View 1 (cartoon, rainbow, N blue to C red):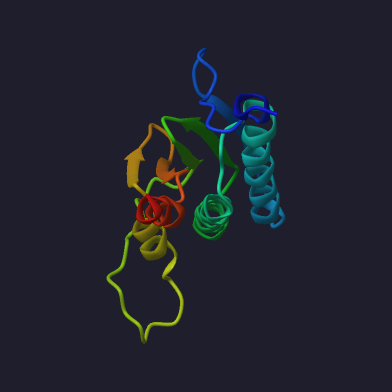
View 2: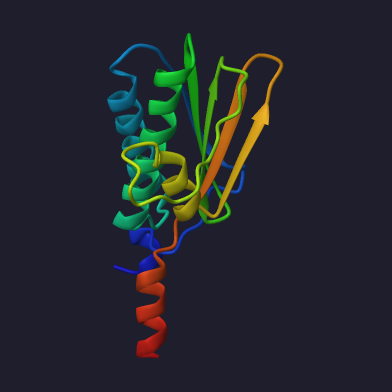
Length: 157
C-alpha cells in the first residue's frame, strides 16, 4: 500500500479548515468537551489523513480541559468551544459570558492550584484573549507536529 492510500502526510482539505463547535453547560461540560476534542482529532486522522501524534492529542485535551474548567468556575451561563484545524495546528477557542479577562499568574512552585493558564501558555504556540460584546473569547493554538519525533527523525538523517 502506498503512503497516499494510508493518508500519511496528507494535508487538510483544500476547501478550508476543518472545524467543530459545541455549546456546554453544567458540571459534565469538562468531560464532554475533552471527549469532543478527542473525537475531532480522531476524525482528522481517519477522515482527512492528517497525522496527529498522541502528544498533540494529549495537549489539545489538556488545553480544552483547562479552558472549559475556567468557564465553569468563573463564568455564568453557557460556554462555546470551537476547534479548528489549519496550517499544521489546532486552534482551541472558548467563549464564555464573563467579561473579566483572566489573569495568568507567574510561576510559583509553592502555590497550590491556579496553574492552568500558566501551563496552557507554556505548551501552546500562541494564546490570545479578546473581550467580546458579551463575555470574552480565548484562543490557544497547538501545533500538531510532534517535535520530539521531528528532532529524532532529523538526528537519524
